[in-house]
Structure formats: structure tokens, C-alpha cells
Length: 471
Image 1: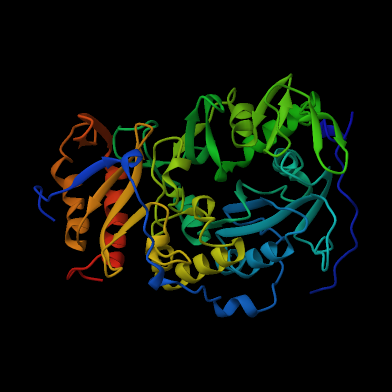
Image 2: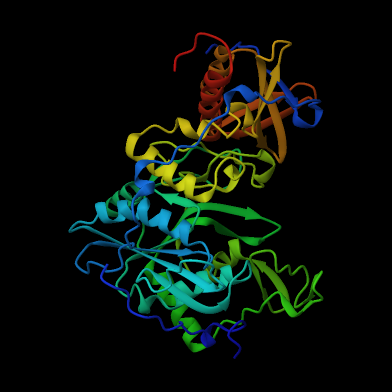
């Protein structure tokens, strides 16, 4: 069958061997974001991104040899554009360095990049041992094929792995924390859905998928772990590979044919809603988004679903959070963070370098800034006075599919918002109630989300607003 429509027809491109090489009655004004009339950005707090010292060092290949006697053998696979050598080098310098550091008698981590066919200007790293080139044209529609290729051909690169880590190349995994949890066989599980109980510590079972789970009608009726990062046990990869070896999966391209007249490119859709600019495949004339393709394929299997909000995105535009959960600032409790909502603030390389520096130092303040300062964050609206000083801010977040803005006049009010979570935290279902006064609507959302929002509100309040709050 055709290489771009059937997984059994794929082939790895041969490559040359590399050289060795506050109070409950705090006044809080809540208003719908739709009623906001003006934006004002504070230009005086322009932040300059400084590369950490490690960024200047030559990138060493990610570890590729697994320690077969280790109890936890984690195989990370990263889908990347062939041309993005600088991004792979940043991964090699940052969290692949952590992969080497956590290696022990108990833990072994290997990492492999999977790339498609593409024209590469300048240097190419396809010869390196941590890169696999797959015979599929590079581009958005290649992503689901490359992700599945890594699992279905696991025996070619991670035969003895006990677990697989799937992640984007602009995501940062805290491998020391992840592997420790795998050794201890513990995770935090939050009940699925909005406005339900707090996360609880659970034991990881023999077969599981662990990540940030979503359910959204745009993607399908089954739950799926968000594409930016997840951990699954190796037996699920084995089951998929065995199934595909018996009856191959039929995943088609988005276009039957493509016409390029020199000005416009026209796609003859292979299925309804297909879009070659979007990561997805045609499956029996149905367009399936890449994010939930693996969730769909795993649905018939019995596995433990672990919804852990420590897999998360860095906060950004709240309109991009379709499931109603807020972006979460990175912290010492994060397990894996994705740049998704922070694209306006940082490029991929800067993000990986900055997150690695934060992981080493424990200081995550850099993610409270954009290139335009704290008021350049898209979740924050700053209102300036006549002297161009920040007078008050509106902090945006999303619940019940509505974007709300809570307005604060000083940093003490921002810090005091956290008391709302404490006062309303007695709900037996672990929920918090928030009254939207101008619409007379009562919202309920999870206590854990309230604490997350409150911590972020306090931090940006201290950074942007006048007052005598602590650092």
C-alpha cells in the first residue's frame, strides 16, 4: 500500500553511521471580557531574553542506549520538522542532559527524534543516532504518521522500554520528577470534567496512560491525553504494533491531489473537513485530529486513565483553552509543560533554555514576563493612568466556556483573591463558586483550578501593581 496511506508501507531511510561523537470580603470586580473597551500595555517593562550559558555549548546527542536491568526504562519520542535542527539541539542541551543525569541502576531514559522528508538548508542532523528519518513528506499531516511510527516500530529503537513518553518538541519534561513518580508508581489524578473534586494521589496500575486528558466534541466522544505530552506503558505500544502487523491501519492523507498554479495551492479533500494545514488524517472518510488519534486507537483497550494537571501548558490567551481549564504557570510541581499558549512571548529554543534554567534554579519568574513585560501577557489587561503608570489590571481566565476578567486595583487585592478559594473550599465536591455580578451567573469550578488561578493572580499582581506585597 502507499507509504502515505498505510503504515505497513513505511520505511526508515538508511543513514550513514555517525562519528563517535487576603480576607473573604476583599472587593473584587468581575466582568465579562467581552465588555472590555480598551487595552493598554506597559511598554516600560520590556524584557530581554538572555540565553542560559548552556545554550552556547555544543549539543551532545540524546541518550539512545537503554540500560536493560533498570526497573524504569523510559523511551521518549519527539516528532520534529526535519529543518528544525536548532530545536533538536536545544532539546539535546536541556532535558536530554537531565536524561543523562537521572540514569541509575533504577532508571534509564532514551530519546529519539522522528522527522519526515524535507529540504534542509545548512546543517542537517539526520546522521545522528538520536534521529530517525521516515519516508513521509514533512508537514502538519505528517505528524500523526510520525507519532504512530514511533510506537508501531518500537522494536527498532526501544525494544526493552517499560514506558513511552510522547511529547512535542516545544514541550519540556521534568524527567527527574517523572521518573521518580514511575519508580514510586504514584501519580495525582483529578476527576475528569469541570467543577468536580480535587486531585488525589493514586497508585499507577500495570497498564496506564498518564497525562492531561480532554473530552471535546470537536475531536470525538472518547477521552484522550493532550498531544503535547503523555506517558503510556509499553504493553499498549506492543498491542498496537501487533494489531497493525496483523491488519494494517489505513490512515489517509488530507488531499486526494494537490494543484499548485504558482500562486495558490488547491487541495482536493480526501474526506470532509480535511485540512492539510492541520495535524490530522482521513480515516474511512472521517477527518481525525492528531491530538485524539491515539486516544481513539486505544479506546477499546483496558487501561488506567490518569488525568494529571501537572502536565500542562504555560498560560497565554484564555480563548485557546477549549476545555475550560486554565493554563498553569510552571513550578516545582510541574511534570511536563508545553509552550502552546506562550508562543507570543518566546521562540522554541528560548523556551526550552529558559525552562531548563528554571528547573535547575527553582526560579520560574521569567514566565511572568513577555517581551513587553508583565503587561504583555495576553491573560492580563493593564489599565494605565494619565502618567502612564499601571493603575489597575484585569486578569482573564475561562470557566464554563466563558472568558471572565477579575479586576484588581493593587497587589494586595490580587493576593487576597486566594482567600476566595479558602472560604469556598468547604464544598463536599471540592468546588468553588464565583458570582458574575453583571450577568447574575454563578460559576462553579474545581478547587485545584481556583488555587492555580489564585497563585498566578498573586504573582502577576506583585509584578504589575503598586502596593507593599512581598516578592
